[in-house]
Image (cartoon, rainbow, N blue to C red; front, top):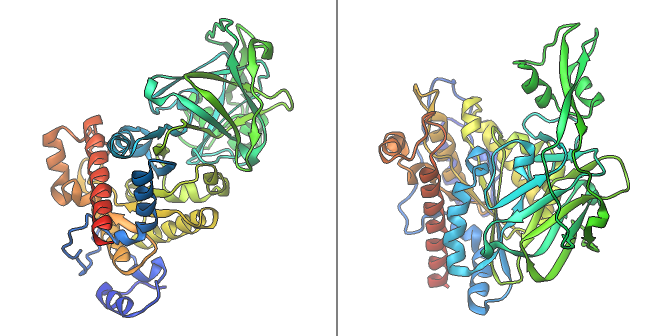
Length: 477
């Protein structure tokens, strides 16, 4: 629907209506990139830190049941970009919520280290072989990127991944393997007591001389690698390649020590329809992922790790550089979310959209696509959207896009029962937030990302908002 010049007219008409309107009804005509969208609608003063907290009532009821009976689990999943991949924000929020409701386990995890990118430090991963990765921002078309926003795969049958959980409070009873189309690419192995000396793999480069008519994506498919890998390892800034150029397209694996399945106790996994799962009577600190000997390629989208205790699990899913539209490209992401069984989904985007000068209209449309696909696969999940935190554009300009997205999200939440919104932008200072965060040591030098302390502060204010809204729910019953 075309965006109106005055959003107030829309807001009042929607308030009078008994039916929720689609996202685009709250979106205005795109404005020039160098001008700010100023909505006359301002958030009304409220004792509730979350706009339209009633949209989370099903989640609050589950929290109340957990607190009252001290049985079962309540699962929270937060999806976003590099602000979430760093795990500092989600880890701080998780700590505060688990302190009140109990620690139900780590939740969803992915071996970011093996994909050569940053990730949580709660788990260490070791391997004896080389793995290739792809991510939703710049994928290889045919590779099945799912719930992590990343994919990890190998062709080495004699490889293994050692998964070690650092902290005793995070030890697990339940392991779920999430794999493309729920195929059994990997088995779970436990130690038989034999020392498995994981060592660095050796490799030598595989090269390819570009021929006429070849493209990077075609070459990547040929060598079962990614466009990202080729560009990064050849210093390419674009997808344009010259005929005759010699490209490094991969590595010939020379494994120092092969892994044999006889070295492990291979566990009988149960197919629950969304994952292959194992439940142990005793807590586990270390286990192994072993390629199933059927097939020639082995893919992993991620793991769900839980204990047998009641409490909260809080899973962070973030991809550096990602936008809503990057997740929306892959239906497998939404299908595999069923394996996480979230009671609350927290959606946190906007920073990367602002650098691409995505209009408010397009941002809200992508959010509608995202939430619609989520609900198709998880119809009972409650959805909380956080506005992006303050930042600058290129350390030179005020990021007015962030403010525009914030106003549109708040306006929509005030007139729709579809989502709740937490205003992280104003919680972190609003227009003065960049300067305030710099003074407190919360903002990184690029004035886009935050320091560890800054992300932890965001996690704490988010957890505080959820806890306050929960208390309001209890008081108003």
